[in-house]
Length: 232
Image (cartoon, rainbow, N blue to C red):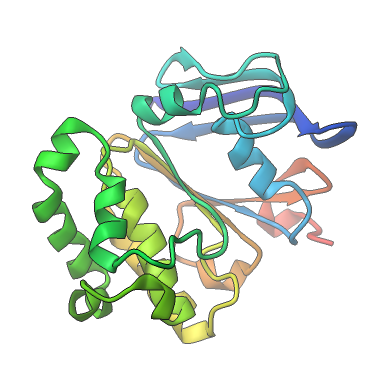
């Protein structure tokens, strides 16, 4: 397998606060990788660094051979549209919804490219197959949904695009165990083809058997195989 994401000596933070410390990581094509650790130890910041949403960073991030990292200071978000166009999609932790939009409108928001927009009805059906409870809620305002249903909408919106790298941040956050299991099982069903998926999560047992590899994160540093790290 070839590498779809290569991170070398990545450090990043906000204002004077350094959160990530010399991160080195390779993700192979077709791989489902989990970054596991307690909240507040840098998992979300890693995703935000990949998508240029942190205050500052330095180090190399190569996606499909294209450099999307490098030294940055302030101006977070300026390169994010270009990174998204390259094929990176992120589901933020929490609901990340527009309460007044319907489920259908939310999903269609994810079909931002010309091809995805033309195929939005087909792609929407695929999301309904992945998350059956959403089918009957297609025209329901998202602000009235349960936490689990909102999380399905948020994940489904990211899957509507033509992404080749999916960054899924804390899919179980605030959800009942049975709903968390349903969401993670659905993520397992997604065919990443020659792309990859990275899931940030603190519930290690939830991901057991659902990913190809798990790496621990503690205090802004990757700690290797989760079976050999202390998560705090």
